[in-house]
Image 1 (tube, rainbow, N blue to C red):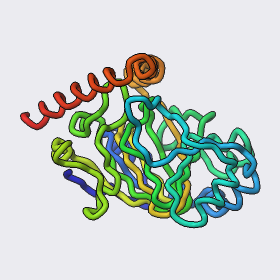
Image 2: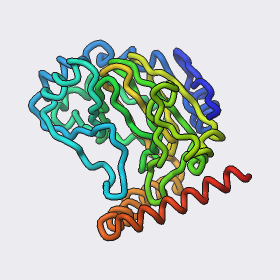
Image 3: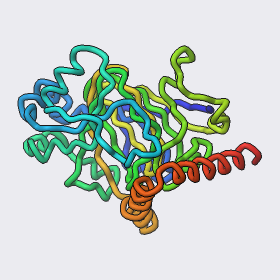
Image 4: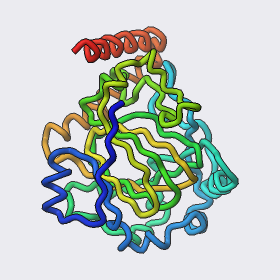
Length: 293
């Protein structure tokens, strides 16, 4: 892999942000954007536990999906309080994603402000909380609706690996899915890495970015960007989503949500193994073309 560091700024003007990052679709970390929010100081595990500790939440482990796994299928359920207690005791490879904590504690929306000065199109009904215990992993994927994301880390550290959408075939994208077939777990540590470069050689030609997010860092992740995240510590983050401004971008997101995903779910139920074999053959051919280019 050819990895570059993500650009980091403390502050940036809307004009510079749009010129150098938003329009060119390039990631950026902004250190000070969230430091003005009450959430920067107020949001802690105990703060959340007091407000939504009894709320039942879906949990996800580190196991990659297979031929039978529908998208976003939970592996377990606990109350949010039980989950916090579990990951506070040490490394625990369990995470929560797409948790709209604000439905259950609407007062939390007063703790941050929407950065409309940077971009338009925020989906303000759906700010989302993402949490993980130390060692938990979000496997390589891109967000199905192709939204632009502002992802703010509030506790713990998280290592993030990023690739532009166009690198999809070098990353062995599964057809009709948003996931990579390759396992990037611990890719940065040769003693623990699960990334099989003999099986997935095109990965070595992929160009992307790498960054470690810390408390208060806000990552701008352009729409369609591939991302793999590993929790170095137990922590949580909030994502604010903004629709792409172009009609084509919006329609592609709608197709992914209601067309592509429906087809994949139905085929996994009807003929899981042949469907998986077909997708594997197709992605391997696409990767071979990248290698011979």
